[in-house]
Amino acid sequence: MKTDKAVPTPTISRILPDGTMIEILYDADQAITSLAVRNPAGEISIEAQVVLPTGERLVPYAPANNLLTSGCVLLPSGVGEFGDKAQLLEQVRAFIHRYVDLSPLYAEIAAHYVLLSWVHDAFNELPYLRFRGDFGTGKTRALLAVGSISYKPFFASGASTVSPIFHILDAFEGTLVLDEADLRFSDATADLSKILNNGNMKGLPVLRTMTNRYRELNPQAFKVFGPKIVGMRESFADDALESRFLTENTIRRTLRPDISIHVPDAMKSDAQTLRNSLLAWRFAARHTVGIDPDRLIAGVSHRSNQIALPLLSLIDDGALRDRIAAELVAEEARVFSERASPPDITVLAAIKEAAAVSPTAHIAVADIARRISSKSLGSFENSITPKTVGSIVRTKLRLPTVKSNGVYVIPNTARPAITALAARYGLSSDATDATDAAARGFLARSAKYAPGA
Image 1 (cartoon, rainbow, N blue to C red):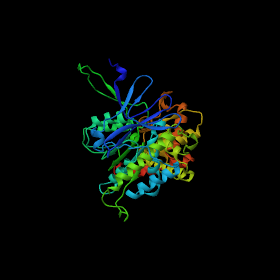
Image 2: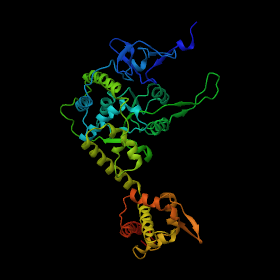
Image 3: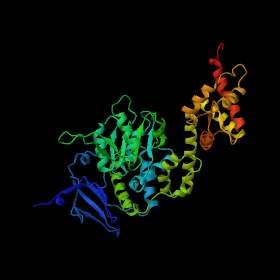
Image 4: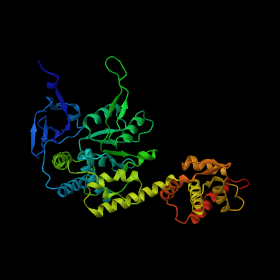
């Protein structure tokens, strides 16, 4: 009589407690699947099944599985050779350059992201790769090229039914390659956003309503963590989601003459060979990579460092790390500048000035309004009221206000938050100059709305 332990477990990949690594292989020409096993001693073997000490029997997915035969999910067909990391990285660069036209810096980012995808489970947070542009700008070609050599890529589009995306991500734990991610007026938009919002950090599964065979409510947690390569026409409205992407803005330009208009047949076989080499690299490198805190970027937020550090930890070229860091600093400054409205900056500059003048006292909301009005354009000195300032302080700047001696004040305990906000929005260290400039700009723009203007 067979025991439950003898029941085969269809397996995509597994890392055992002793460090043994198991990965599925699929040979489309032979129509067979098997398991590549790398033991703790570094020895690699190809097995039809793996029986664990617990009695569990691991077997590969069937070769007739539609996900494999359709090319929806791409896998290695064997364990190749890679020489060393630098040689493998050069092969990845050459492959990307051969089939897609990217800016020089982003081509480097994409090549290293491919390597990151193959060892992504060694990290707790991940960035996403994005190609953003209108139709005909090459973003879909970029998705196909970069996605085809990433770790267990799963190709989908924003028009796909969302349920299988959840199930496939949960089962394969590979790279989601998602085209047209910003489709408008789609019922799937909210669910795709859940995948992207939760999928860059370990331990944040998405709960989906499920029922068992007895029709009892039985919610299921789907693992959605993993690399994601996204193509879209515009940007997401959610700033938090936007911060997860490393973006190449594709543009209309003359295609390099050495790049075919059509996807050549050779790309498929070239990608297969490269996936085999990348699997060999995963086996060699997975237990040796990790976060390098010495590669934190000065001048960007904790979120930006959290997102970028896994990629920077894999980049050995210090000059390239510096170029990427400079790009991220500039991009974050641009985002903060666009996000901050003129009234917010005006009020924050006045708060900063008041804090500098009275370094130990609470900051009165009415004093902030007076400071802004005193720098106004004469007839508009009543444009800023304490009520308006208080609203901006609480709802836009998220600073607390309390009542003290009959007036509203920002408590002294909020000074660290004020300093952090000022740095974040790039206000001058000279608080008075910052208030002057901000107030003049805001009140000048307000003039056209004043009575009689």
